[in-house]
Amino acid sequence: MDFDVVIIGFGTSGFFLAFELIKNNLKVAVIEKEDNIGGALVNSLIFPTAGFHTLSGKLIIVDSVKEFLDFCIKNGFSKGHIRDPLNFSYSITPINPIAYKAFFVDYFLPNNNFVLFSSSVIENVYEKDGIIRYVVIRNKDNKKYKIGGKFFVDASGVLELSSYIDIKYRLELENLQAATLIFRLSNIDFTKIIKYIKENRDDFYSKTDIDLMLSNDFISVSGYFELASKYLFNRDLLLSRDRFLFFGEILKNFVYVNTSRIFLKDIINFIVNEVNNLGVKKEDFFKKRSSVILPSNKNFYKNKNILHYDILERIGYYLGLKQVFYIYKIMKKYIKGFENSYIDLIAYKLGIRQYKVLKGEYELNIEDVINCNNFDDKILIGTWPIDIHIKDKIVEKKVNEDGYYIPFRSLITNEYKNLVFVGKHISSDDYAFSSLRIQATCMNMGSVVGKILSNLIKKRTYVLDIDFSLIKKIFKQTFLTFY
Image 1 (spheres, rainbow, N blue to C red):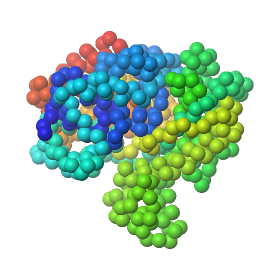
Image 2: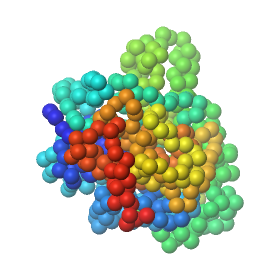
Image 3: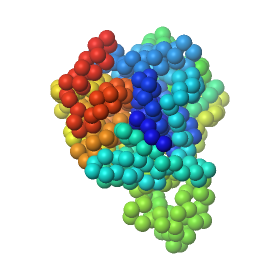
Image 4: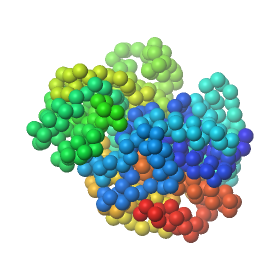
């Protein structure tokens, strides 16, 4: 099967990339290893969506993404943009994860140029002379497909293709941001929470605006620092957290709790210590554990496999579950408003903020983000503050008030002529990464790259031969209305 564009990953960036391409009547294939649509936003319950406004209040949104948001508002899946009650950013945009499935049914399924290979994994990638020719995939029924394309896009967020072809990347365990397992609580008494915040302002994030919570009818809480200092530093659970963090839902009396934290280096240490403590051979240890949580692969502990993303995610999920039930127990017992609460949903996947990051033609860095350095090949505007979740705290830095530019060179590598990367794994340092990884930026990125690839296909040009005047034209047309 041959397509114009083959996309690996149907998450935040891949979703809007595919949408932009099918709007331009191109033939698109998406390879997605999960059953669910929407990637981490759906599987890891990343809520709410954020990053559509600069700190000065300018709206940054591409037309395809706006079309999706208008659909969400019209059908009751979103309140639209509201001012951030924590004043960390200018706005947040609560979107019910179900919206992605609903939009998919209305806009993707009827399109004959679109094929989704869900529950499918890549087995081989074939390339010659710097051009990727096709990939071989296998689905859950063990059927194999050979998929060719003019362009390939890695939208996995974890550099999936780096396991099959020579792609340079950074992976520094000591510096990786914390992962989290988000869960939702229902039957919450918001009135008690608001009352407690009013009476104990020093126990919460300093920029918290209660009036915004009331006017938005939406709660955002970062605090209970005193309680956190007593209970959220638990060595047995590998938990190290300085605050409770949770956000309201579109529906009343629900909150998404984003308080757990699991580091990849802790996952690896857990594996080593757990095996050693049992006094058994490593391969026997993994054989005996349930394959639902831990892998049964006897070759797991070989160096080339220990950093395999799927394995780390599965073990991290097991560790995260223990944290989730512990955190819930503390909230229910000690935080007013949660006395009658119960867990009604736990994310299907561990939310891993950071894994492999591309080493592309240009590495976006902290100076670019803070100073809004200009680029001839700028394609995108980032908005979110620098927001690094490390050790037991969050490192914050403001970016340029009107946002910053992201160049096309951060999305490509010299080795491959028809390969592009979109999403949080594009080429950047840790500071820039912590800002650009946000949902709205990745949504816009997917859509803009869709516009670029549509033009390249018409001109029969590869990404390494792109004319910067084309990029300038697309950027101007894309953001003229909104920026």
